[in-house]
Image 1 (cartoon, rainbow, N blue to C red):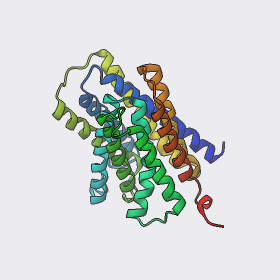
Image 2: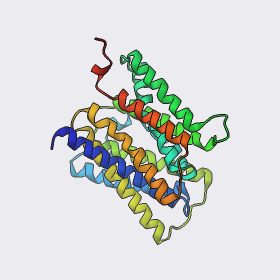
Image 3: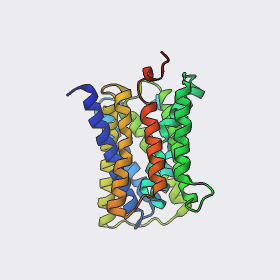
Image 4: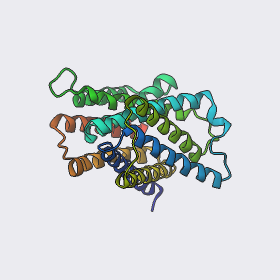
Length: 288
């Protein structure tokens, strides 16, 4: 098995895991306060990644995790986690996932504006067309527009900001330590939602099982994502992130009776197409 094939398989498995976690979370939200569920999943994630860090001889939350850059990353993480959780609970999982796929486009845009990375005219065009795909899904000012869809849009900006801040994060932080920091933010997101909405209750056996399954798939997906990004070429492995949309739409149809409309499918195709080309090796955009 080549490094590229291994990385691609782990990335696909990771995206499947995240999609399953989203499906369980949406199912939980029908019978339990979504903020409470998110907070509990966050605590489970903190415990798991803290144990992994301790077994490796590392402090779960070292001083390097308390820098200004990590504080900025944490803020974006809260925004992304909070609003995406609301999007999953209140809007079709297929459309929320489709909007989230524009994250790499925003990351490339941010890398150009913040880190001064060179972006060719062709890449700028792909970023613009990708954002048009988001507008096709949102349909602002049209009959099919739902203000709740803006939750996924804000989440996408939050996750893009987190990824950009991660790029500037201290290199000494291990993946387990970043996992602890990330799940702390997930827990805080759940607490914020619960504080606003209320509705905390004692979960029944079904809710406990769903929470454990959601946490298990989410943590496994995070681990698989880490392995994927350390295997093969980034330009080959990263486009497999878009398989999450395929899984999300399939789960939406099979388990929640969703039927993505034509605009959602067209917008998703535009976003994914632009993203795949945008993440291709840079030599494709060089002039002869």
